[in-house]
Image (cartoon, rainbow over all chains, first blue to last red; front, side, top):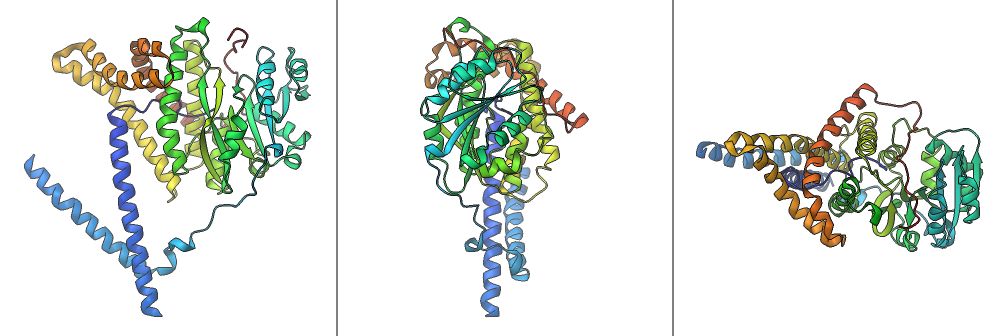
Length: 47
Length: 398
């Protein structure tokens, strides 16, 4: 057994973490999609 | 205030826009560095596993009070059970044998991870089986545990983690430590563990009741864990080396024995968290650009807020002239909502009555976190992964 299993996720700290995590994940997904689009554009131009 | 909002409403979209432009430019300039969706490397693919190709392995030291029930419960799953007695000085080996297990009795106390390794090799489990469920000697699994875990052992999954339920006998119905643990397990598993499982970012598994592919055990068992919690090492290695997915099986239920005194509760949590922080330091969590690292850093951010917000709430409410009692009541109100849901879901109405104790223990848990962090900084690795478990309760009269 290990780690933080005795740590309930209940209050404001969890809400803040969830919101921050969601926002960062969304930004990350957006940037990855943008980079992929840039790479595809380059490959298409090169072809 | 209005001015700050105005600045933020311009700065944030501007930051996002600049970042997107920079990302497009990066993709244009370094197309070879950008991983296309269809080119993503697949996780290892494994063969399907039948029930007859699985077994249960239990490491035990002086567990005569519980080992027979643990073996019987495991055998009720229709699988072979193997027990390694780690130089027990009581009747562990005899009881396990009588309960129908294959038993290996070691004469030297080597600790749980080493005992598991020796048993795994001596019994030839890698050759005989495709998956092995490792249990603690005081854990009783339900008859469908192995089948439910197998159902989630997909072709890219290496570890299936069972569901922890605190064994809370009538004789100890007012034990606050069992109440706290019963509530915490429920809360943790219903939120953190399910989310982590969905995204394959589980940072801790239940070493007391999880199923592993033998291909994974072949990799991790031969290495002596450098942390005080063996399964922490195993799960971090699984992620770092891409050995397969780690998923949670909420229908694979295991009944666990948990600490019943303040001393045991503190000691066990300290060891768990010490191991956790050792893993973070040793495996350099947060230093790689991966989904696992992102999720773990987010979790650590949550821990930081958690440690700070308890005392901060008490201080803020108390300093606002409302008094210390009101501050604790404020914290209790939030916990009451969750505790009520837990009482309903666990069918344990008395859990609500433990509210004051749980609020206080929740504050004390922050102390353990800080203590464990300091301990991990001072001792980031251990030479031998050996510990003393809390006293076990006999399962008779449960």
